[in-house]
Amino acid sequence: MTTILGIDPGTHRLGWGVVSGSPSKQSFIASGCIENKPGTTPDIYLPKIHQEISSIIAEYNPDLIGLESLLFQKNVKTAIPVAEARGVIRLIAGSHNLSVIESAPNTIKLSVAGSGSASKFEVIRMVGLLLGIKISQKRDDELDALAVAISTIVTNKNL
Image (tube, rainbow, N blue to C red; front, side, top):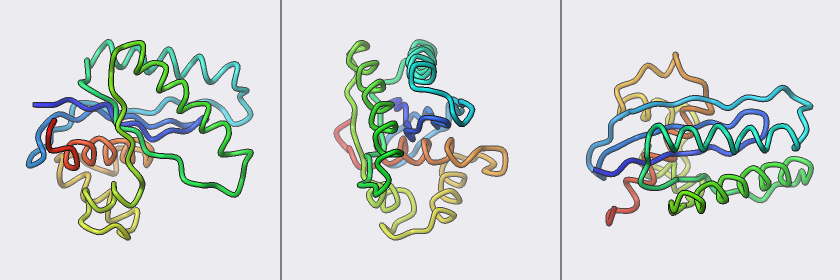
């Protein structure tokens, strides 16, 4: 049984979810969001991401990290801070000897909902069904991170 820490990277709200299982069956362990107020500067939110992800790793002891890949964004002001957050996550992974497996959004949609063009709602609905959780009690960022974790398990059959 493999335990994955799935991460939906962001700066002001970073979703995380821990899932264990195999390609045929996954189980929910925990999820949450690391939140910062809009306007929080990188010198505040990057160390917070480092501290909180490190704590999550210490508590749940994942076998590896699943990370949603960065899409090409027209807005550089958004892309650069998200890339910095992803760099912090990779640093944490390296310091804990954890591999990082990146997945593109269409790969996540395909492996969770059965279609690379699935809507956000279809993916979220399937996350709830696959993990037996009430999606109304979770934030979108948590559900996205759980989808990343499920996808990481499903698409990497050698785990």
